[in-house]
Length: 270
Image (cartoon, rainbow, N blue to C red):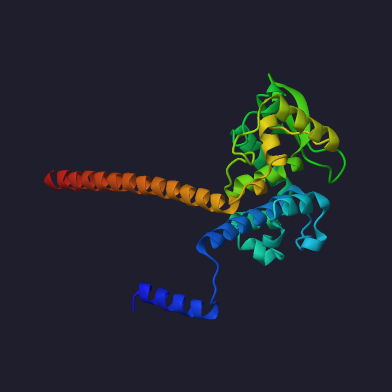
């Protein structure tokens, strides 16, 4: 029996059990939102915004519950550690259990910001770096914005957990509901009011912070589908890179075999 026959049988059994199955588009959309919800909880946890025992929705702190509900991700979020692990890589599962996960999050954040994953830095900074730990045990890890070798600003690393979650889930940068990226004085004023109200400084540029915080992913219809498509495209790129690497390795192997044959022949004639 071929794999196609097995799949056909499973399809018939599934249709028999669920006479009115959801359309494929809905399944893809829900799958993408489930992944995004999992990475929201994962990043909130490793950033120190969420405690290990707070995965259940009724235990979420307000700073986690509000964005998940605003993005309509709350019903897709895993409720247990095992369910969360199902969405994570083995390395991320290890990070989730690591007592030093907050430091790992801060180091990842520095790497992403300096690598340009979130766009230009604010305050015309050249780079960010992790500040030395505070004197108080358990104090927040902070980022230092550096320009020309001197610190020009700081902000808590944990404040960027949402952007890291979206990045790890494979989501593209958010845009406004009309499709245009927010920019200009109006965007700056709106974000300025938000930051003034919440007293949350950001290391990344005004435009990026505005896109993520004010016009979040959930305001765009079909974001789960876009996320899945982005992950598929990334997978194709990785597969292409691996294919090219394999071709190069096969070429090197053939060259090595030829050189070995020549060396053996030359030794046999001496």
